[in-house]
Amino acid sequence: MRNVTKDNITEAFKGYMGDEMEPRSREIMSSLVQHLHDFARETNLTHNEWRTGIAFLEGCAAIESEDRHEFVLASDILGLSSLVDMLHSRPDATSSSVLGPFHVSGAPPLPVGGDMKRDFGGPVLLAEGVIRDTDGNPIPGAEIDIWQTAPNGLYASQDEAQDTYSFHGLMTVGEDGRYAFTTVKPVEYTVPTDGPIGAILDACGRHPWRPSHLHYIVKAPGYRDLVTEIFPDDDPYLDQDTVFGVREDLVMKYHEKPASEFPEGMALSGKINAPFLAVEFDVTLAKA
Amino acid sequence: MRNVTKDNITEAFKGYMGDEMEPRSREIMSSLVQHLHDFARETNLTHNEWRTGIAFLEGCAAIESEDRHEFVLASDILGLSSLVDMLHSRPDATSSSVLGPFHVSGAPPLPVGGDMKRDFGGPVLLAEGVIRDTDGNPIPGAEIDIWQTAPNGLYASQDEAQDTYSFHGLMTVGEDGRYAFTTVKPVEYTVPTDGPIGAILDACGRHPWRPSHLHYIVKAPGYRDLVTEIFPDDDPYLDQDTVFGVREDLVMKYHEKPASEFPEGMALSGKINAPFLAVEFDVTLAKA
Image (cartoon, rainbow over all chains, first blue to last red; front, top):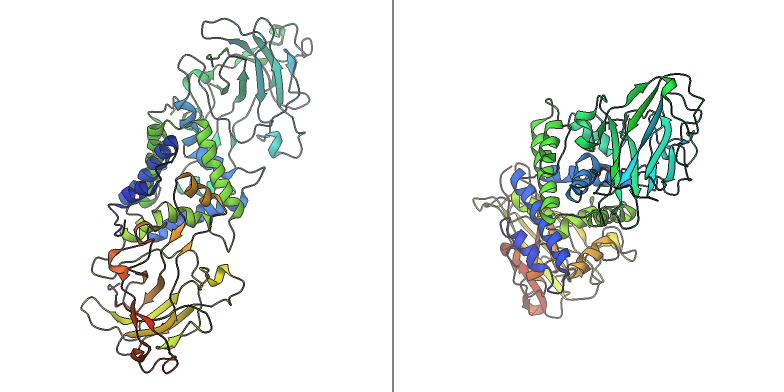
C-alpha cells in the first residue's frame, strides 16, 4: 500500500501478511494489531506518550532476569494473566487462579499429614481436603504441589534466609484422595514495587498488595492440571487483589479450633498446645 | 471486586484506579487495558499463546541495548510508530514519517551545496529544495538534519567501517530557504532480522525490506519539527515498506541528468563527469 494513512494502516498490516501464514497466527496478529491501532487512534496517542510506553518496556527489560519476571508481573497487574486463566477455567471444576512468578519446581515430597511450618513463627494452619473428579469421586494418586510465603511475606525464591524449598511441598494422595498438611497461616504481601510495575501502580493510584493465600498445582493422569489459590474470607485485600486472582469459590473460612481438636495421624499430632486454624478445601479436577 | 470473572475483569481494572489519578493517564490506561482484554477474549488466548507473547518480550529484552532498540522496531513493524506519526501529521504541511532507530544526534555542519558522498561508490544524487511555511514563503535559517544509509545498506551506527557521522549532515539554510547537497543514491535495506522481530516477520510471511530514502529532520523557530523521508518513485518496496513509512507526497522522481547540467556553486561543481540523479523536494513546515 503506497499511501498509508491513519485510517487504512490496519488493513495495510493485514494485507502484508503472507498467504502461507498459519491461520491461528493470522487470527492472533490481526486481532492484536487491530486493537493496538484502535487504542492509538482512540486516545490520539502522542509521540511523548509513545516514548513513555517504549521507556516502560525498556525499563522492564533492564531488570528482567531468571529471578525477576517483570513482563509476567506487568501481565498480572493489568489483569491479562487472570483473564487468560478464566477464559480456560472449566465451570464444572474448581476455579483456576494465577500461577504467579514465585513457584519453584522440584519440591521435595511431603507425606499426607506432613508439616511445612517447621520452626517458623505464626499461627499453625491445618489445611486438608479431598481431590475429586466432577462426579464427586476421589482421585487416588493425585498430586498436589503446595507453596506459599513465609511469615515475612516472602517466597523462598525471594528470600536468601530461606532454603530453596522452604514452604514448598509435593504431596501424593492415597486411595481416599485426601490431602492434609500443617503450615503457618500465609500473610498478605506486595508484588515487587521497585521496578516499572511499581511506577505504574503508583501512577494508577493502586496498592501493590495481594491477599494471603495457599497456592496449589493439582495434577492427576487423565485430568486437566489445575493452578489455584485458597484465600481466607477475612483478608483485607480480597476485594482488590492487585493481580485479580480472587474467585468466589476460592474464598474459605479459616476456623479457629482448640488444641484438643487437633487430629491424629499428623506430623504435629500431640505437639499442638494452643488454638490452631483449620481450613477444609476440596478440589475438583475436570477431565483432560 | 471479590468475584472477578472474564466478563467483569476490565471493569474491575478500571475500578482499581484511584480517584486522584491524572485524567490523561486514566484515559490511556483504560483504553489500553480495554483493548488488551478484548484482544484476549476475542481470540480466546490460551496459556501457551500467552507464554509465546511473554517469551517474545523477554527475547526483545535480551538483545535490547544502546545500539539495538528492539521494542522500537517492534512498534515500527506493527505499524504503531507510523500510526502515531500520522495521528499528529498536519494536513497543511509535508507529511511526517518514522524517525527509526538509526539517527545519530550532533551531526557536523554541512554547508548549503555541500557533499556527503565523499569517496563512496554509487550514483551521485543531487537533492535540493526550499523549506517553506504554509503560505509558500521560504523560512530563512531553517535547519535540516540529513541522514541515510551508505551504499552497503547500513547506517553509520550499524557499521564499524563508517565513521560516526558518515552520511549525516546538519544544514542551515539562507534567506532563500534553499537546501542543496550531493550524496550517493540511497539503497533499500532490511531491518535487523536476527532477533524476535525477524521471527515475527517470518511467521507473518513478510519481508524485512524498507524502500530507499533520504531522511530529514527539519526545524525552524516558531514551526513544528518535522521528521520525514523522501522515496524514489521506482523503488521496488514502495508498496510494502515493512515499517509503513511511505506517504504519497513523499514519493519523488529522481531524474537522471547529463553531467553538463550539474549546477554551479556546489562542492562537486566541475568534478562531475558522468550522468547524475537529481531530486527536487520542497518541505512545508506547519506553525508550532
